[in-house]
Length: 344
Image 1 (cartoon, helix red, strand yellow):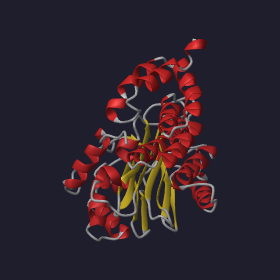
Image 2 (cartoon, rainbow, N blue to C red):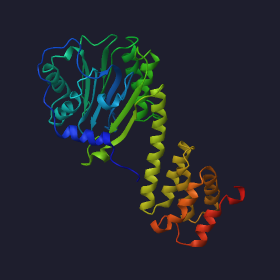
Image 3 (cartoon, rainbow, N blue to C red):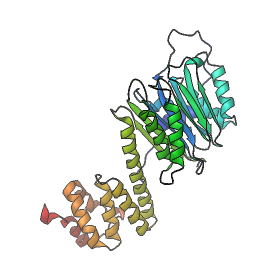
Image 4 (spheres, rainbow, N blue to C red):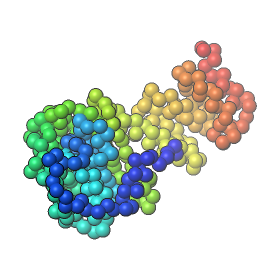
């Protein structure tokens, strides 16, 4: 599997390992401190899988780095408006310690003299939810909670944003053709359809974690997509979601190859290539698997198309036998290398 531990996850682990103190009672400034992540978001627990997720969009740079927090087997938090970022790791720490979302949120807001400008929502691993919209959040602002989810928004064009998010999320959950990520995205798209952020659009993010922890945080995080700066952040988030699914199938294909299950790998590689036809690497590995399976006549035309698109993949072929990914047979390797040369 081609994975590595991203910096955002390292930061997540570090922040949740050491829980910061509750914000101190300082004199209230003329303008509240903190990032101005005025936005709309959803926190949710999938009713069947138990997966936990957060999705958000805002006219603010890198909104996902401050708003979205989630931990497998614990819960998910969205902290926004005039953001107090510590609500994320502190909220998760309290949930991890057995607090209910309602009690955790009440504890945090009671200690925060700037609570009137905060907007926060939490859901725990049991599907219990709590939300807070301070009375000084910029209108239109509000939230709506439902079975296992909360939607919230501030600085919106219209007060219809969060009710539309709730309706869209529930409808998407009822659609068997849509998974959890698609349901979260549907909520964001509904917000935008109602006018969204009065300032416009800039960034978006989506995080989904497992229902229960594996004990290794990098395996617990099932999806972590961020659009930091884009003219159409939701459109880009939707595109990245398709990419994610393609590479997820690709990674599963790699695992099948490692287990010697070439039939399963071939199916997974084929699905990945269909989802991302512009990514040359996906059909390349499909062709490799076909060739190893003895289906050389099917593999060679795919190799030819890959080489025609990007010649560098032809250079990779001779390196694969040493890793056991192609037969250590010079004649067979030359046959692959010759694919498509007559049409070069």
